[in-house]
Length: 101
Figure 1 (cartoon, helix red, strand yellow):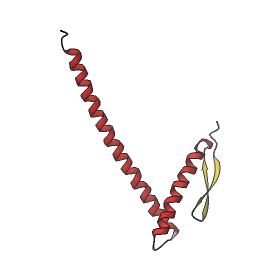
Figure 2 (tube, one colour):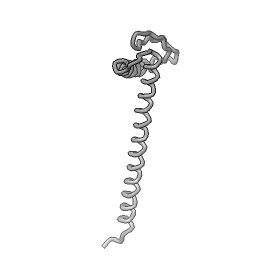
Figure 3 (cartoon, one colour):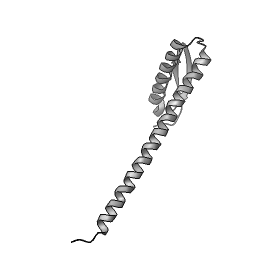
């Protein structure tokens, strides 16, 4: 597959943008656009001052917050899994080291 960039037209609220991406990244880009567009519509609906730039910044902050919370959660789960694996390894080593009767 080619690594050449293609231009994709995306729409956020009432504005269109031309974005370059690799053909293999097109579906991911469109999913990201849909997610961002949904956040922007939610913020526009709830906002008292619905300026486009303000909506875009608030949506970016909201999505960034979600990402950071997911990373923290993933890190905590990874740490917990690591602790469980270490505990199971110690139990297995103890069981293998025990004399057979």
